[in-house]
Image 1: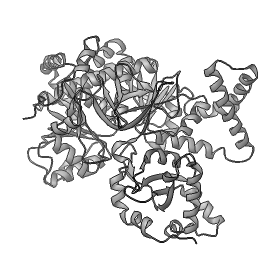
Image 2 (image 1 turned 90 degrees about the horizontal axis):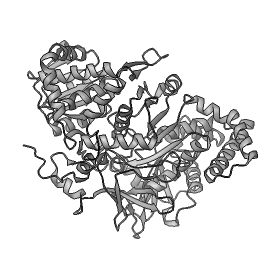
Image 3 (image 1 turned 45 degrees about the horizontal axis):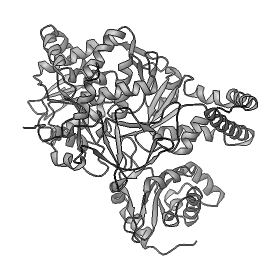
Image 4 (image 1 turned 45 degrees about the vertical axis):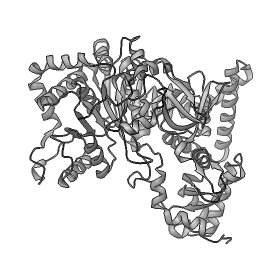
Length: 628
């Protein structure tokens, strides 16, 4: 029987909660339903033209129906409910409906493979699983047929699905269509309402509300046990830093299974704002114009793609000159404004370029953006500077699944590109002698589910959680910079240490490079696995007498290798000689989440990349030096 007795006591969380009125997710949701019941909450763009919203009261009704249905299924406090679905208005209903009865919500990325999904469900011993589209439903059925998911008793599907044609489902598993499951809850709600409210009122700030599994970049995923107060403390603190109000509109693009997007939703709920779900990356530009959000959280890759598209659209002739001059004036104006030294002439120039250039960029993202928020991976400094120079606020932050997640965030009035900002209120940070960042705070997890040994390994005797990230602190700005993962630092055969993330971010600033993975551990020099910008490379090939249609021949061409190596050296001039990339191999395709090479939030799984391309990487170190 699982017990929390072997896990550290959440002293910082308890101390925080004693000073607060809002200490659980139940508090957040109930307070907002009372205050903002008739205001819009969750929105979708089903017709491709307009967003329609459910109100807080309407969402509350479905939450109670879902909770009631779970009670009819016999769920007890502490039982696990797995959510294997895409972003939708049903997602928060599953979340709040589960925690209202003391159950533990276990969200999973909808892009997980059948094997990855099976591992998590079996590890957490869930009794209920909810899946959305046919893709996720099929993975669950395939896992059942393989004899897995032994703990599952109820299988709820959001998209209508015909189970009559499915053979060999376990007899004990009862299948439900979403509306039928809610109908069951509504039918029995009169007798279950008091039970739901009694359970919700008994919830404490240090009760576990969710298991969020780590991305598994360095091993098997582990279930971080996150408590009600972890999320509540984040919602309260972030709402103050970013000054979110009930008038705000969030665009939800990141998967809600990502703890960063999830805590943004709790922040939205806390202040009575609303959220619109982006349909997909394909329709993101259109959805931004339709919804006209005031803030958008995402990972750096989205902002890099936006940056690249804007640059590409302004890359020739007079348009390029005007654009470059606008960015130059934008940078000068921003720095002068920060220092309180804006001249009349500078102000005049800035407002001219605001009309000529910046207004168009802002209109392309809806025209109302107050803040972009970037997290989940390091951001490129040139991308951050570009948005700021264009008059668009972008706040880079930092955190981990285990810290639910935010530890640091740039402030709207104090943005320092290249840093992740200051520590947020209530969080205490220290840097260990080896450079590792360690943390205490009300947002730190209780531990890893069923893994007390792994938990003990990441907490020290003083109760600090060790993040595994190498960090630097700037006393002048009071900001932190994350340089790399401790486990990912490469040690060359000459004993020199190389931080791959810093190199990779610099290399990705080249217009010729889409993805890069630095290698070289225990080797004599640094190498790179590169995915080029094929649209540009193919144009280059035509101008150099190379057939761009034959991709295999193209990527093995020595001229291209030398050209890309020269481009890499141009953007890495500030690195030491031993950190310079000496050789590279070119991949014919992008690294893929489907192949397990990157996480759903686009973090590289280095061990998988090294395994998948082992022979190519080995050839980089053993082949003779090619000159033609």
